Amino acid sequence: MGDELIRTIENACTEFQVPQTRAHAETTLLEFRQSVRPQQACELILERSNSVDARFQAAVTLRESMMRDWVLISIEERRAIQSFCLRYVLTRTPEPPAFVLGQLMACLACILKRGWVENGAGACGAFLGEVDQAIATVGSSTARKFGFQLLAAVISEFSPTTSSPMGMPFEFHERCRIEFEIQYLQQIFVHAVQKSRELAASGAPQQGTDGGVCEAGLKLMTLILSWDFQRGGSNSSGGFGYVPEKEKTTETTIVHPGESWRSLLLAEEASDWVLALQGALKGQPSPLLPGIRQVLVQLSSLALDFFPQNDGGAARRTHLQRMQHAVAVWGWPPSAVVAAAVTADAA
Figure 1: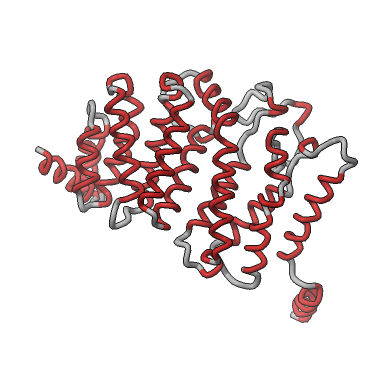
Figure 2: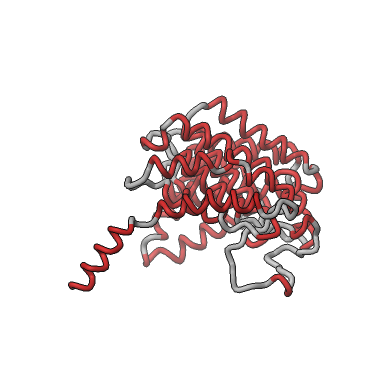
């Protein structure tokens, strides 16, 4: 039965690419995705199929069915599926395609969020610990990169603007958002900074030998700093991108973390390694540069009321001077600007 199912899904994926057989193939794939309790079948296809399209269909079906069949799946089965997905993401060789891994990461994030109320917020801490332990056991740069990407998927799921449909009321999503921000968002940011900082100190990112780990860490930091933070540490912001009318401006890049983030973001340790990394890469093409620039732009865009109000603006000046130096490095030297202008005029 297992081999027959795998062949059926593989054939449907192949036939879907042929106009003459697409309609029949689409019906087959939709029937599979909408079938009752297809989780074991999805795992079987992910483990044994050689077709990346079939594995993608299985990953999508697994994610969707976990939300649709949630009440029919026992706690033990949920945990087993969570462990399967985590193991597949971090240890599968050869490395699966990104679009398959992305679906499984999204599935893990959905499982974590959907069980938030019944399992308690502490389940998230246990999951993060499990991820750390799995990465340490594997010990590869690929596992570390995928670990960062998995955390990014979790943050995206708990962010109201990018969360998945779960058939749950607004109050559920809002509770998850608030509790996740309060209990885990800083912890994940500190983790991203510490691991990326340690890696940058080794010189591997500058040499392009870190397997994309630092780039993933910078993207994770960017995602966290893009979070719709609660205003003033209260729930009055309403979430879901809501900004009180009196606070609305034409500026859309202001970062509004609460006071609890102050010591973390204003500490030199949060940005000095990014500045050093930028300096080391000056003049060299690197996939790290977009992430470096985005992080520095966000750190340069902290809201005015984020800084201490009782130091005469000293903390704000110190921070912005450090950021200004970083931004100045991006520009051309005056002589190059003049030469380019002269060339353009001559043309």
